[in-house]
Image (cartoon, one colour):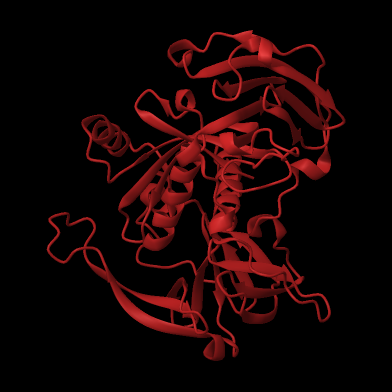
Length: 401
């Protein structure tokens, strides 16, 4: 996996591109180690491609289908405080709608009733659940539904101390997990271990210590979710791969963990933002403790970040989309974020403000996954030009879709 990481933090970002599909505009940033002045940079476009000519040579970036650079539209623009290190250019694009480009392959979008699916461990691709057919695939109420029941009911809460559990052939879809009934194959593929979450000596009585029955893959010991009841599994969408069962089809080899996590979370944030009309998310651990605060700015970005060492040379190198090599610039979400563990005064003020004002739709993930997600986001931040890495008191990152 080491060869999939971009050495941006060591050598710096040579070229960065962000296109906005809705605005049909773009920002191009070229480091002055690559080109000294605007006159050293020439931008041309072809069929879903962008060519950037610098003294180091030509860099060719592949764009998504339907996105075309408008010839002659690239003009220099002030770089502000970063003028000594960076050259900034504005450009225009034309966009034709592509149905394939907007399609999502996330678990939440692919599950359908009366279809047959197999569930695999994302870590080792061991088949966990065989040929599951769901008569019903139903969405659960959003994460804080129980807190507002009293505002809707004129009598005592009928759901008090009751869990919403699936029947034998149900699949219940939560914000970041799936609830489904156990079957006979679970004994051979899954293991359970009771774990304690929360602090026993915590002074916060609203979040007391409690015990969870963690469910893990028997082959690689990766935590997949929880046993929320004797016959019910809660599987996190970041831990499993769900594919239609078609004949003797074998699943694709396990993809890079960081890429899978990035695209899965990005697709889910976009789905939640669209359905709930919210742009603020609080990534939390199962004990309800906020770990990461995310503010979704743009969902129409197309980005590419190329290290200085990959610009020019003997051959053209296609764009690494953000922090993993890719032959194409990638659709991405633009986020502002702050880690709740950050001890700086500004960050603590942000966290306190979000908590006091109940800002941020909760997205619950296992602690290890929260840590992995923060690393993915920090890696994205490190591949941005210096002028792009912060916005006010927040840090900036992109998550590929």
